Image 1 (cartoon, rainbow, N blue to C red):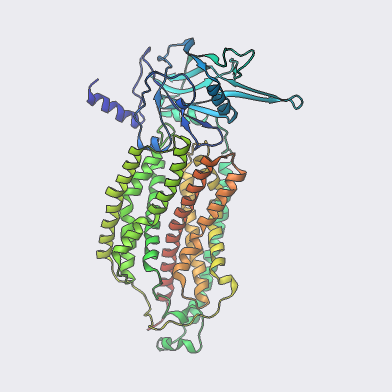
Image 2 (tube, rainbow, N blue to C red):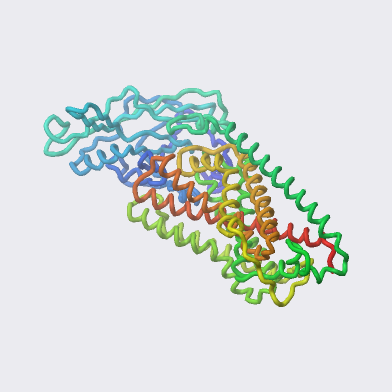
Length: 591
Protein backbone atom coordinates (compact mmCIF):
# COMPACT_ATOMS: atom_id res chain seq x y z
CA UNK A 1 0.00 0.00 0.00
CA UNK A 2 1.36 3.42 -0.96
CA UNK A 3 1.74 6.11 1.67
CA UNK A 4 -0.94 8.18 -0.09
CA UNK A 5 -3.45 5.32 0.14
CA UNK A 6 -2.59 4.71 3.78
CA UNK A 7 -3.16 8.38 4.56
CA UNK A 8 -6.51 8.30 2.77
CA UNK A 9 -7.66 5.24 4.73
CA UNK A 10 -6.59 6.91 7.98
CA UNK A 11 -8.60 10.02 7.16
CA UNK A 12 -11.65 7.94 6.22
CA UNK A 13 -11.37 6.06 9.51
CA UNK A 14 -11.20 9.32 11.46
CA UNK A 15 -14.36 10.50 9.68
CA UNK A 16 -16.19 7.40 10.85
CA UNK A 17 -16.32 5.63 7.45
CA UNK A 18 -15.73 1.91 7.18
CA UNK A 19 -12.55 0.81 5.39
CA UNK A 20 -14.14 -2.58 4.58
CA UNK A 21 -13.02 -6.18 5.20
CA UNK A 22 -13.09 -9.19 2.94
CA UNK A 23 -13.79 -12.67 4.26
CA UNK A 24 -10.65 -14.06 5.81
CA UNK A 25 -8.98 -10.69 6.28
CA UNK A 26 -7.23 -10.35 9.65
CA UNK A 27 -9.01 -8.06 12.12
CA UNK A 28 -6.54 -6.73 14.65
CA UNK A 29 -7.58 -6.93 18.29
CA UNK A 30 -5.80 -4.40 20.47
CA UNK A 31 -5.44 -4.82 24.20
CA UNK A 32 -5.79 -1.50 25.96
CA UNK A 33 -6.07 -1.13 29.72
CA UNK A 34 -7.25 -2.66 32.98
CA UNK A 35 -8.38 -1.12 36.23
CA UNK A 36 -10.77 -1.26 39.18
CA UNK A 37 -14.40 -1.32 38.07
CA UNK A 38 -15.46 1.47 40.45
CA UNK A 39 -12.50 3.79 39.68
CA UNK A 40 -12.91 4.81 36.02
CA UNK A 41 -9.81 7.03 35.94
CA UNK A 42 -7.49 4.52 37.64
CA UNK A 43 -6.29 2.47 34.68
CA UNK A 44 -3.15 0.49 33.92
CA UNK A 45 -1.72 -1.05 30.79
CA UNK A 46 -3.13 -4.49 30.11
CA UNK A 47 0.33 -6.01 29.92
CA UNK A 48 1.15 -4.96 33.49
CA UNK A 49 -0.73 -8.13 34.49
CA UNK A 50 0.86 -11.57 33.99
CA UNK A 51 -1.07 -12.39 30.79
CA UNK A 52 -0.24 -13.70 27.33
CA UNK A 53 1.80 -11.20 25.38
CA UNK A 54 3.87 -11.18 22.18
CA UNK A 55 7.64 -11.27 22.40
CA UNK A 56 7.79 -7.74 21.02
CA UNK A 57 4.97 -5.45 22.10
CA UNK A 58 3.90 -3.12 19.29
CA UNK A 59 1.73 -0.17 20.23
CA UNK A 60 -0.85 1.49 18.05
CA UNK A 61 -0.34 5.13 17.08
CA UNK A 62 -2.82 7.13 19.16
CA UNK A 63 -4.38 10.54 18.81
CA UNK A 64 -3.93 13.24 21.43
CA UNK A 65 -7.43 12.66 22.77
CA UNK A 66 -6.81 8.93 23.16
CA UNK A 67 -3.59 9.54 25.11
CA UNK A 68 -5.38 12.02 27.39
CA UNK A 69 -8.12 9.43 27.92
CA UNK A 70 -5.56 6.94 29.23
CA UNK A 71 -5.57 4.66 26.18
CA UNK A 72 -2.42 2.63 25.54
CA UNK A 73 -3.40 0.20 22.77
CA UNK A 74 -1.04 -2.62 21.82
CA UNK A 75 -1.34 -5.58 19.47
CA UNK A 76 -2.42 -8.88 20.99
CA UNK A 77 -1.85 -12.57 20.26
CA UNK A 78 -5.51 -13.12 19.30
CA UNK A 79 -5.86 -14.20 15.67
CA UNK A 80 -9.26 -13.09 14.38
CA UNK A 81 -10.26 -13.27 10.72
CA UNK A 82 -13.31 -11.58 9.25
CA UNK A 83 -16.41 -13.84 9.24
CA UNK A 84 -14.38 -16.96 10.12
CA UNK A 85 -15.36 -18.86 13.26
CA UNK A 86 -12.73 -20.25 15.59
CA UNK A 87 -13.23 -22.77 18.39
CA UNK A 88 -10.99 -23.36 21.37
CA UNK A 89 -7.87 -21.81 19.91
CA UNK A 90 -4.88 -21.88 22.27
CA UNK A 91 -3.52 -18.42 22.96
CA UNK A 92 -0.56 -19.39 25.12
CA UNK A 93 0.46 -21.51 28.10
CA UNK A 94 1.87 -19.75 31.13
CA UNK A 95 3.66 -20.79 34.28
CA UNK A 96 2.80 -18.34 37.01
CA UNK A 97 5.01 -17.76 40.01
CA UNK A 98 3.58 -17.25 43.46
CA UNK A 99 4.09 -13.48 43.12
CA UNK A 100 2.24 -13.39 39.79
CA UNK A 101 -0.64 -15.42 41.20
CA UNK A 102 -0.91 -12.99 44.09
CA UNK A 103 -0.93 -10.07 41.63
CA UNK A 104 -3.83 -11.64 39.74
CA UNK A 105 -5.69 -12.39 42.98
CA UNK A 106 -5.41 -8.76 44.10
CA UNK A 107 -6.61 -7.54 40.70
CA UNK A 108 -9.64 -9.85 40.76
CA UNK A 109 -10.50 -8.95 44.35
CA UNK A 110 -10.48 -5.28 43.35
CA UNK A 111 -12.89 -6.12 40.49
CA UNK A 112 -10.45 -5.38 37.69
CA UNK A 113 -11.98 -5.20 34.23
CA UNK A 114 -10.14 -5.12 30.91
CA UNK A 115 -10.75 -3.15 27.73
CA UNK A 116 -9.92 -4.44 24.25
CA UNK A 117 -10.52 -2.59 20.99
CA UNK A 118 -11.59 -4.27 17.74
CA UNK A 119 -12.00 -1.94 14.75
CA UNK A 120 -12.61 1.01 17.13
CA UNK A 121 -15.26 -1.00 19.01
CA UNK A 122 -14.43 -1.26 22.75
CA UNK A 123 -14.81 -4.67 24.37
CA UNK A 124 -15.08 -5.01 28.13
CA UNK A 125 -14.88 -7.95 30.47
CA UNK A 126 -13.75 -8.91 33.95
CA UNK A 127 -10.32 -10.38 34.57
CA UNK A 128 -11.63 -13.05 36.91
CA UNK A 129 -14.34 -14.24 39.24
CA UNK A 130 -14.71 -13.85 43.01
CA UNK A 131 -17.24 -15.55 45.28
CA UNK A 132 -17.93 -14.95 48.97
CA UNK A 133 -20.16 -17.46 50.70
CA UNK A 134 -21.01 -18.65 54.20
CA UNK A 135 -20.26 -17.17 57.58
CA UNK A 136 -19.07 -20.15 59.61
CA UNK A 137 -17.15 -21.51 57.83
CA UNK A 138 -16.40 -18.58 55.52
CA UNK A 139 -15.57 -19.36 51.88
CA UNK A 140 -13.53 -17.01 49.68
CA UNK A 141 -12.93 -18.21 46.12
CA UNK A 142 -10.96 -16.36 43.45
CA UNK A 143 -10.78 -17.65 39.88
CA UNK A 144 -9.19 -16.45 36.63
CA UNK A 145 -11.01 -16.49 33.31
CA UNK A 146 -8.62 -18.30 31.00
CA UNK A 147 -11.04 -18.73 28.10
CA UNK A 148 -12.89 -15.92 26.32
CA UNK A 149 -15.68 -16.26 23.77
CA UNK A 150 -15.67 -13.36 21.30
CA UNK A 151 -19.08 -12.62 19.79
CA UNK A 152 -18.72 -10.28 16.82
CA UNK A 153 -21.55 -8.75 14.81
CA UNK A 154 -21.02 -7.63 11.22
CA UNK A 155 -22.94 -6.05 8.38
CA UNK A 156 -21.58 -6.45 4.88
CA UNK A 157 -17.86 -5.73 5.04
CA UNK A 158 -17.74 -3.89 8.38
CA UNK A 159 -17.69 -4.74 12.08
CA UNK A 160 -20.74 -3.46 13.97
CA UNK A 161 -20.27 -4.69 17.54
CA UNK A 162 -18.24 -7.10 19.63
CA UNK A 163 -18.23 -8.42 23.18
CA UNK A 164 -16.78 -11.25 25.24
CA UNK A 165 -18.64 -13.95 27.11
CA UNK A 166 -17.65 -16.45 29.81
CA UNK A 167 -21.10 -18.01 30.08
CA UNK A 168 -20.04 -21.63 29.56
CA UNK A 169 -16.56 -21.29 31.05
CA UNK A 170 -15.31 -22.32 34.48
CA UNK A 171 -12.71 -20.07 36.11
CA UNK A 172 -9.34 -21.50 37.07
CA UNK A 173 -8.85 -21.29 40.87
CA UNK A 174 -5.88 -19.13 41.80
CA UNK A 175 -4.41 -21.30 44.52
CA UNK A 176 -0.87 -22.50 45.06
CA UNK A 177 -0.41 -25.50 47.22
CA UNK A 178 -1.79 -29.01 47.48
CA UNK A 179 -4.24 -29.71 44.69
CA UNK A 180 -3.15 -26.75 42.54
CA UNK A 181 -2.41 -27.24 38.87
CA UNK A 182 1.28 -26.77 39.36
CA UNK A 183 4.33 -27.91 41.24
CA UNK A 184 7.06 -26.23 43.19
CA UNK A 185 4.97 -23.19 44.12
CA UNK A 186 3.90 -22.35 40.56
CA UNK A 187 0.61 -22.51 38.66
CA UNK A 188 0.39 -23.70 35.05
CA UNK A 189 -2.54 -22.31 33.06
CA UNK A 190 -3.55 -22.34 29.41
CA UNK A 191 -5.29 -19.35 27.84
CA UNK A 192 -7.65 -19.98 24.93
CA UNK A 193 -10.38 -18.24 22.96
CA UNK A 194 -13.24 -18.79 20.52
CA UNK A 195 -14.62 -16.46 17.85
CA UNK A 196 -18.20 -16.46 16.57
CA UNK A 197 -19.61 -14.12 13.91
CA UNK A 198 -23.23 -12.98 13.71
CA UNK A 199 -24.89 -10.90 11.01
CA UNK A 200 -26.44 -7.61 12.15
CA UNK A 201 -29.14 -5.52 10.43
CA UNK A 202 -27.53 -2.27 11.58
CA UNK A 203 -25.42 -0.41 8.98
CA UNK A 204 -21.98 0.85 9.85
CA UNK A 205 -23.23 4.44 10.19
CA UNK A 206 -25.53 3.40 13.07
CA UNK A 207 -23.25 1.06 14.98
CA UNK A 208 -22.90 3.59 17.80
CA UNK A 209 -26.53 2.79 18.69
CA UNK A 210 -25.60 -0.84 19.31
CA UNK A 211 -22.82 0.15 21.69
CA UNK A 212 -25.10 2.53 23.62
CA UNK A 213 -27.56 -0.29 24.21
CA UNK A 214 -24.86 -2.59 25.62
CA UNK A 215 -25.00 -2.96 29.40
CA UNK A 216 -21.59 -4.07 30.70
CA UNK A 217 -21.60 -0.92 32.84
CA UNK A 218 -24.70 0.06 34.87
CA UNK A 219 -27.29 2.33 33.28
CA UNK A 220 -28.36 5.41 35.23
CA UNK A 221 -30.08 7.65 32.67
CA UNK A 222 -33.57 6.15 32.59
CA UNK A 223 -35.38 9.16 34.11
CA UNK A 224 -33.37 11.75 32.23
CA UNK A 225 -36.17 13.40 30.27
CA UNK A 226 -38.63 13.64 33.18
CA UNK A 227 -36.01 15.18 35.47
CA UNK A 228 -34.85 17.70 32.89
CA UNK A 229 -38.39 18.80 32.01
CA UNK A 230 -39.15 19.27 35.71
CA UNK A 231 -36.01 21.36 36.13
CA UNK A 232 -36.78 23.47 33.05
CA UNK A 233 -40.32 24.26 34.22
CA UNK A 234 -39.10 25.38 37.66
CA UNK A 235 -36.39 27.57 36.14
CA UNK A 236 -38.77 29.21 33.64
CA UNK A 237 -41.18 30.03 36.49
CA UNK A 238 -38.32 31.46 38.53
CA UNK A 239 -37.12 33.64 35.66
CA UNK A 240 -40.64 34.88 34.98
CA UNK A 241 -41.15 35.75 38.63
CA UNK A 242 -37.87 37.69 38.88
CA UNK A 243 -38.40 39.60 35.63
CA UNK A 244 -42.02 40.57 36.38
CA UNK A 245 -41.30 41.73 39.94
CA UNK A 246 -38.19 43.65 38.88
CA UNK A 247 -39.96 45.41 36.01
CA UNK A 248 -42.84 46.48 38.27
CA UNK A 249 -40.44 47.90 40.84
CA UNK A 250 -38.43 49.72 38.18
CA UNK A 251 -41.59 51.17 36.68
CA UNK A 252 -42.53 52.65 40.05
CA UNK A 253 -39.00 53.98 40.54
CA UNK A 254 -38.96 55.70 37.15
CA UNK A 255 -42.39 57.21 37.79
CA UNK A 256 -41.20 58.58 41.17
CA UNK A 257 -37.73 59.77 40.17
CA UNK A 258 -38.59 61.36 36.83
CA UNK A 259 -41.10 63.79 38.36
CA UNK A 260 -38.07 65.73 39.55
CA UNK A 261 -37.26 68.76 37.47
CA UNK A 262 -34.24 68.61 35.20
CA UNK A 263 -32.33 71.14 37.26
CA UNK A 264 -32.62 69.39 40.60
CA UNK A 265 -30.26 66.48 39.92
CA UNK A 266 -27.44 68.08 41.85
CA UNK A 267 -29.64 68.58 44.92
CA UNK A 268 -30.80 65.03 45.29
CA UNK A 269 -28.97 64.63 48.57
CA UNK A 270 -31.46 66.88 50.30
CA UNK A 271 -34.63 64.82 50.05
CA UNK A 272 -34.20 61.77 47.85
CA UNK A 273 -32.90 58.31 48.57
CA UNK A 274 -32.45 54.98 46.80
CA UNK A 275 -30.36 54.10 43.78
CA UNK A 276 -30.78 57.50 42.09
CA UNK A 277 -28.91 59.34 44.83
CA UNK A 278 -25.66 57.46 44.12
CA UNK A 279 -25.61 58.30 40.41
CA UNK A 280 -22.32 60.19 40.88
CA UNK A 281 -20.63 57.13 42.42
CA UNK A 282 -22.16 54.11 40.72
CA UNK A 283 -19.64 54.20 37.87
CA UNK A 284 -16.63 54.75 40.10
CA UNK A 285 -14.03 52.23 38.93
CA UNK A 286 -13.36 49.35 41.34
CA UNK A 287 -10.11 48.26 42.99
CA UNK A 288 -8.02 45.47 41.44
CA UNK A 289 -8.93 46.50 37.90
CA UNK A 290 -6.50 44.12 36.25
CA UNK A 291 -7.77 41.07 38.13
CA UNK A 292 -11.39 41.97 37.40
CA UNK A 293 -10.67 42.33 33.67
CA UNK A 294 -8.73 39.05 33.65
CA UNK A 295 -11.73 37.28 35.22
CA UNK A 296 -14.04 38.78 32.60
CA UNK A 297 -11.70 37.82 29.76
CA UNK A 298 -11.14 34.22 30.82
CA UNK A 299 -14.85 33.87 31.58
CA UNK A 300 -15.67 35.01 28.04
CA UNK A 301 -13.15 32.50 26.70
CA UNK A 302 -14.78 29.59 28.52
CA UNK A 303 -18.21 30.77 27.45
CA UNK A 304 -17.01 30.61 23.83
CA UNK A 305 -15.31 27.26 24.44
CA UNK A 306 -18.38 25.65 26.02
CA UNK A 307 -20.64 26.91 23.25
CA UNK A 308 -18.26 25.58 20.61
CA UNK A 309 -18.04 22.13 22.23
CA UNK A 310 -21.83 21.81 22.46
CA UNK A 311 -22.32 22.93 18.85
CA UNK A 312 -19.70 20.45 17.63
CA UNK A 313 -21.45 17.71 19.60
CA UNK A 314 -24.81 18.66 18.05
CA UNK A 315 -23.22 18.41 14.61
CA UNK A 316 -22.26 14.79 15.37
CA UNK A 317 -18.50 15.33 15.57
CA UNK A 318 -18.22 13.22 18.74
CA UNK A 319 -19.38 9.63 19.07
CA UNK A 320 -18.56 6.60 21.15
CA UNK A 321 -16.16 5.19 18.54
CA UNK A 322 -13.94 8.27 18.34
CA UNK A 323 -11.81 7.72 21.40
CA UNK A 324 -10.88 10.99 23.11
CA UNK A 325 -12.28 13.20 20.34
CA UNK A 326 -13.87 15.61 22.81
CA UNK A 327 -10.57 15.94 24.71
CA UNK A 328 -8.73 16.87 21.53
CA UNK A 329 -11.43 19.34 20.54
CA UNK A 330 -11.37 21.00 23.96
CA UNK A 331 -7.59 21.50 23.85
CA UNK A 332 -7.65 22.92 20.31
CA UNK A 333 -10.54 25.25 21.12
CA UNK A 334 -8.92 26.38 24.37
CA UNK A 335 -5.77 27.38 22.47
CA UNK A 336 -7.67 29.11 19.66
CA UNK A 337 -10.08 30.99 21.94
CA UNK A 338 -7.21 32.50 23.93
CA UNK A 339 -7.55 35.54 21.69
CA UNK A 340 -11.05 36.05 23.12
CA UNK A 341 -9.75 36.31 26.68
CA UNK A 342 -6.97 38.69 25.67
CA UNK A 343 -9.30 40.92 23.66
CA UNK A 344 -12.09 41.15 26.25
CA UNK A 345 -9.72 41.66 29.17
CA UNK A 346 -7.44 44.28 27.67
CA UNK A 347 -10.27 46.13 25.92
CA UNK A 348 -12.23 46.64 29.13
CA UNK A 349 -9.04 47.32 31.10
CA UNK A 350 -8.28 50.19 28.72
CA UNK A 351 -11.84 51.52 29.02
CA UNK A 352 -11.63 51.78 32.81
CA UNK A 353 -8.31 53.67 32.53
CA UNK A 354 -5.97 50.80 33.30
CA UNK A 355 -2.33 51.59 32.57
CA UNK A 356 -0.39 48.34 33.09
CA UNK A 357 -1.81 46.51 30.07
CA UNK A 358 1.21 44.21 29.70
CA UNK A 359 0.70 42.92 33.24
CA UNK A 360 -3.00 42.55 32.47
CA UNK A 361 -2.25 40.27 29.49
CA UNK A 362 0.12 38.12 31.58
CA UNK A 363 -2.44 37.84 34.37
CA UNK A 364 -5.17 36.92 31.88
CA UNK A 365 -3.08 34.17 30.27
CA UNK A 366 -2.13 32.65 33.63
CA UNK A 367 -5.40 33.04 35.55
CA UNK A 368 -6.58 29.56 34.54
CA UNK A 369 -3.47 28.00 33.01
CA UNK A 370 -1.47 28.34 36.27
CA UNK A 371 -4.04 26.48 38.45
CA UNK A 372 -4.46 23.95 35.64
CA UNK A 373 -0.73 23.26 35.48
CA UNK A 374 -0.46 23.00 39.27
CA UNK A 375 -3.41 20.59 39.50
CA UNK A 376 -2.22 18.53 36.56
CA UNK A 377 1.29 18.27 38.05
CA UNK A 378 -0.07 16.81 41.29
CA UNK A 379 -2.52 14.45 39.55
CA UNK A 380 0.01 13.31 36.95
CA UNK A 381 2.64 12.69 39.63
CA UNK A 382 0.23 10.45 41.54
CA UNK A 383 -0.60 8.52 38.35
CA UNK A 384 3.08 8.22 37.49
CA UNK A 385 3.85 6.94 40.99
CA UNK A 386 1.13 4.29 40.70
CA UNK A 387 2.06 3.29 37.14
CA UNK A 388 -1.33 4.29 35.73
CA UNK A 389 -1.88 4.85 32.01
CA UNK A 390 -3.48 8.20 32.93
CA UNK A 391 0.06 9.55 33.48
CA UNK A 392 0.92 11.47 30.31
CA UNK A 393 4.14 10.53 28.48
CA UNK A 394 6.83 13.17 28.02
CA UNK A 395 6.04 13.62 24.32
CA UNK A 396 2.42 14.49 25.06
CA UNK A 397 3.45 16.91 27.82
CA UNK A 398 5.79 18.68 25.41
CA UNK A 399 3.05 18.79 22.77
CA UNK A 400 0.57 20.39 25.18
CA UNK A 401 3.19 22.83 26.46
CA UNK A 402 4.07 23.74 22.89
CA UNK A 403 0.40 24.32 22.07
CA UNK A 404 0.16 26.84 24.90
CA UNK A 405 3.52 28.53 24.28
CA UNK A 406 3.25 28.70 20.49
CA UNK A 407 -0.52 29.14 20.07
CA UNK A 408 -2.38 29.96 23.30
CA UNK A 409 -0.13 32.64 24.78
CA UNK A 410 0.64 34.43 21.47
CA UNK A 411 -3.06 34.58 20.64
CA UNK A 412 -3.73 36.06 24.09
CA UNK A 413 -1.13 38.75 23.41
CA UNK A 414 -2.49 39.45 19.93
CA UNK A 415 -6.04 39.64 21.25
CA UNK A 416 -4.91 41.97 24.03
CA UNK A 417 -3.14 44.32 21.63
CA UNK A 418 -6.14 44.44 19.31
CA UNK A 419 -8.49 45.02 22.26
CA UNK A 420 -6.30 47.84 23.61
CA UNK A 421 -6.13 49.61 20.27
CA UNK A 422 -9.84 49.23 19.51
CA UNK A 423 -11.12 50.06 22.98
CA UNK A 424 -13.43 53.07 23.10
CA UNK A 425 -14.58 55.10 26.05
CA UNK A 426 -16.42 53.59 29.00
CA UNK A 427 -19.67 55.40 28.11
CA UNK A 428 -20.97 56.06 31.60
CA UNK A 429 -24.34 57.88 31.52
CA UNK A 430 -23.46 59.79 34.73
CA UNK A 431 -20.38 61.74 35.70
CA UNK A 432 -18.39 60.60 38.74
CA UNK A 433 -17.43 62.92 41.59
CA UNK A 434 -13.88 63.07 42.85
CA UNK A 435 -14.87 62.42 46.48
CA UNK A 436 -16.72 59.12 47.04
CA UNK A 437 -20.00 59.16 48.91
CA UNK A 438 -20.19 57.51 52.31
CA UNK A 439 -22.02 54.20 52.18
CA UNK A 440 -24.68 53.72 54.89
CA UNK A 441 -24.62 50.63 57.06
CA UNK A 442 -26.28 47.71 55.27
CA UNK A 443 -28.66 45.13 56.79
CA UNK A 444 -27.39 41.57 57.09
CA UNK A 445 -29.31 40.28 54.09
CA UNK A 446 -27.38 42.63 51.79
CA UNK A 447 -23.94 41.40 52.82
CA UNK A 448 -21.65 39.74 50.30
CA UNK A 449 -21.94 36.26 51.84
CA UNK A 450 -25.74 36.33 51.65
CA UNK A 451 -25.70 37.49 48.04
CA UNK A 452 -23.20 34.78 47.17
CA UNK A 453 -25.40 32.16 48.80
CA UNK A 454 -28.49 33.30 46.90
CA UNK A 455 -26.73 34.02 43.61
CA UNK A 456 -24.89 30.70 43.68
CA UNK A 457 -27.70 28.43 44.79
CA UNK A 458 -30.31 29.48 42.23
CA UNK A 459 -28.15 28.82 39.11
CA UNK A 460 -26.94 25.60 40.71
CA UNK A 461 -30.52 24.46 41.24
CA UNK A 462 -31.14 25.05 37.54
CA UNK A 463 -28.45 22.55 36.54
CA UNK A 464 -28.42 20.17 39.51
CA UNK A 465 -30.31 17.42 37.68
CA UNK A 466 -28.23 17.67 34.52
CA UNK A 467 -25.08 17.93 36.61
CA UNK A 468 -25.68 14.43 37.95
CA UNK A 469 -25.75 12.98 34.42
CA UNK A 470 -22.64 14.91 33.45
CA UNK A 471 -20.82 13.54 36.49
CA UNK A 472 -22.07 10.04 35.64
CA UNK A 473 -20.58 10.52 32.16
CA UNK A 474 -17.24 12.06 33.12
CA UNK A 475 -16.61 10.03 36.28
CA UNK A 476 -18.63 6.96 35.35
CA UNK A 477 -19.26 4.74 32.37
CA UNK A 478 -22.07 6.53 30.57
CA UNK A 479 -21.99 7.83 27.00
CA UNK A 480 -23.68 11.23 26.98
CA UNK A 481 -25.69 11.82 23.79
CA UNK A 482 -28.52 14.28 24.62
CA UNK A 483 -26.60 17.38 23.59
CA UNK A 484 -29.77 19.23 22.61
CA UNK A 485 -30.97 19.07 26.21
CA UNK A 486 -27.50 20.12 27.36
CA UNK A 487 -27.68 23.21 25.13
CA UNK A 488 -31.07 24.15 26.62
CA UNK A 489 -29.80 23.70 30.19
CA UNK A 490 -26.68 25.72 29.36
CA UNK A 491 -28.79 28.59 28.00
CA UNK A 492 -31.05 28.49 31.06
CA UNK A 493 -28.01 28.49 33.37
CA UNK A 494 -26.72 31.67 31.75
CA UNK A 495 -30.18 33.25 31.81
CA UNK A 496 -30.70 32.48 35.49
CA UNK A 497 -27.25 33.79 36.35
CA UNK A 498 -27.86 37.04 34.46
CA UNK A 499 -31.33 37.60 35.98
CA UNK A 500 -30.22 36.86 39.53
CA UNK A 501 -27.22 39.14 39.16
CA UNK A 502 -29.41 41.98 37.89
CA UNK A 503 -31.85 41.54 40.76
CA UNK A 504 -29.11 41.43 43.41
CA UNK A 505 -27.37 44.46 41.89
CA UNK A 506 -30.64 46.40 42.01
CA UNK A 507 -31.18 45.56 45.68
CA UNK A 508 -27.58 46.57 46.39
CA UNK A 509 -27.98 49.95 44.68
CA UNK A 510 -31.32 50.53 46.41
CA UNK A 511 -29.43 50.49 49.70
CA UNK A 512 -27.16 53.28 48.36
CA UNK A 513 -24.23 50.87 48.05
CA UNK A 514 -22.40 51.45 44.75
CA UNK A 515 -19.81 48.67 45.14
CA UNK A 516 -21.52 46.47 42.59
CA UNK A 517 -18.54 45.67 40.37
CA UNK A 518 -17.00 42.82 42.29
CA UNK A 519 -20.30 41.95 43.98
CA UNK A 520 -21.88 41.09 40.61
CA UNK A 521 -18.98 38.76 39.80
CA UNK A 522 -18.95 37.03 43.18
CA UNK A 523 -22.71 36.64 43.58
CA UNK A 524 -23.29 34.35 40.60
CA UNK A 525 -19.68 33.19 40.39
CA UNK A 526 -20.21 31.45 43.74
CA UNK A 527 -22.07 28.75 41.78
CA UNK A 528 -18.68 27.10 41.48
CA UNK A 529 -18.61 26.60 45.26
CA UNK A 530 -21.95 24.78 45.12
CA UNK A 531 -20.69 22.63 42.26
CA UNK A 532 -17.62 21.58 44.25
CA UNK A 533 -19.77 20.80 47.30
CA UNK A 534 -21.97 18.69 45.03
CA UNK A 535 -18.88 16.86 43.75
CA UNK A 536 -18.04 15.88 47.34
CA UNK A 537 -21.62 14.64 47.78
CA UNK A 538 -21.40 12.71 44.51
CA UNK A 539 -18.12 11.08 45.52
CA UNK A 540 -19.45 9.95 48.90
CA UNK A 541 -23.04 9.03 48.07
CA UNK A 542 -23.42 8.47 44.32
CA UNK A 543 -20.25 6.62 43.39
CA UNK A 544 -18.11 3.74 44.60
CA UNK A 545 -14.79 5.43 43.88
CA UNK A 546 -11.98 4.93 46.38
CA UNK A 547 -8.22 4.96 46.70
CA UNK A 548 -5.68 7.79 46.51
CA UNK A 549 -5.24 7.70 42.72
CA UNK A 550 -8.92 8.12 41.87
CA UNK A 551 -9.55 10.55 44.75
CA UNK A 552 -6.72 12.92 43.83
CA UNK A 553 -7.87 13.07 40.21
CA UNK A 554 -11.54 13.49 41.11
CA UNK A 555 -11.12 16.32 43.60
CA UNK A 556 -8.32 18.01 41.66
CA UNK A 557 -10.31 18.30 38.46
CA UNK A 558 -13.52 19.02 40.36
CA UNK A 559 -11.81 22.12 41.75
CA UNK A 560 -10.85 23.16 38.23
CA UNK A 561 -14.43 22.58 37.06
CA UNK A 562 -15.72 24.78 39.87
CA UNK A 563 -13.21 27.47 38.87
CA UNK A 564 -14.36 27.33 35.23
CA UNK A 565 -18.01 27.77 36.21
CA UNK A 566 -17.12 30.62 38.57
CA UNK A 567 -15.20 32.48 35.86
CA UNK A 568 -17.83 31.88 33.20
CA UNK A 569 -20.87 32.79 35.29
CA UNK A 570 -19.03 35.68 36.94
CA UNK A 571 -18.35 37.16 33.53
CA UNK A 572 -21.96 36.72 32.37
CA UNK A 573 -23.40 38.20 35.56
CA UNK A 574 -21.06 41.20 35.41
CA UNK A 575 -21.98 42.14 31.86
CA UNK A 576 -25.67 41.65 32.64
CA UNK A 577 -25.41 43.94 35.67
CA UNK A 578 -23.41 46.55 33.76
CA UNK A 579 -25.97 46.60 30.94
CA UNK A 580 -28.84 46.88 33.43
CA UNK A 581 -27.21 49.69 35.43
CA UNK A 582 -26.39 51.67 32.32
CA UNK A 583 -30.00 51.28 31.21
CA UNK A 584 -31.64 52.49 34.41
CA UNK A 585 -29.35 55.51 34.80
CA UNK A 586 -29.67 56.43 31.15
CA UNK A 587 -33.46 56.39 31.57
CA UNK A 588 -33.41 59.05 34.31
CA UNK A 589 -33.81 62.79 33.74
CA UNK A 590 -30.44 64.13 34.80
CA UNK A 591 -28.07 66.90 33.74
